[in-house]
Length: 277
Image 1 (tube, rainbow, N blue to C red):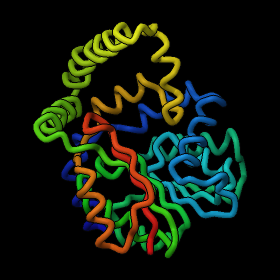
Image 2 (tube, rainbow, N blue to C red; image 1 turned 30 degrees about the horizontal axis):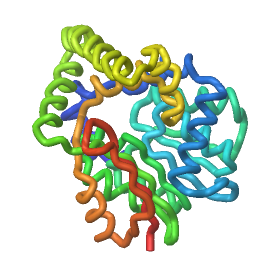
Image 3 (cartoon, rainbow, N blue to C red; image 1 turned 90 degrees about the vertical axis):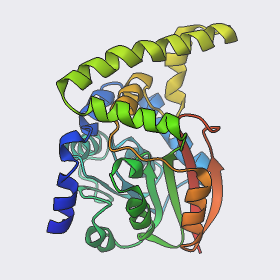
Image 4 (tube, rainbow, N blue to C red; image 1 turned 180 degrees about the horizontal axis):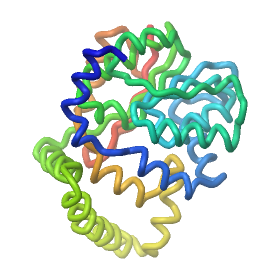
């Protein structure tokens, strides 16, 4: 990484959420069902039946689950993350399922480092789910994420929805969480009961057992609701965008929107799949 980039990233390093610690805990819950759900979500959004023979770049690989899913679906995978413990998570999964495999490489890197990104080459699929808005420079990250996409290749990104004042509120919560020990203690104590109560109320109105929500959550990309709560509360830096902003941004850079899945204007990620013309 360039010295200039390291100086920039240091400005926010004291308040940066340690995503890798949360992902390491998530790996203890990982089972075959979660992996299969991750595979299904990739195939569904990309609208393909296999990734065999395709190259796949995972920007901000996190737990490594979707790198693993892409590799199991036949892709040649390159994974990177800025967080060293996230890199270790992907390496752990590779060791479990694809030890010694030359078609899956894992390394530490940053999407904000243009020289690094340009050194990676071109890929059929570039994937970055819920990552670029945590870099501290989202629009630069979105720009750099487009660079490795080959002509005719696909770009699959998920970005937090802009809820105006609500987003500003959550940004303050996340910043407090990452400010030190008091925030890490106080924020979960306050908000996890709030999440539980809100979910319980919705379940009761639907006539569904509250426990069913926890069991069914893994069907949403194979993830874990509790680990996602912690990721949400601590995920800082934090930026947001309206769907039309992402659409216009990539259209101006020669991309065509193939598929859009929004969070309905609420809290969460809007998902986009583009093709480079």
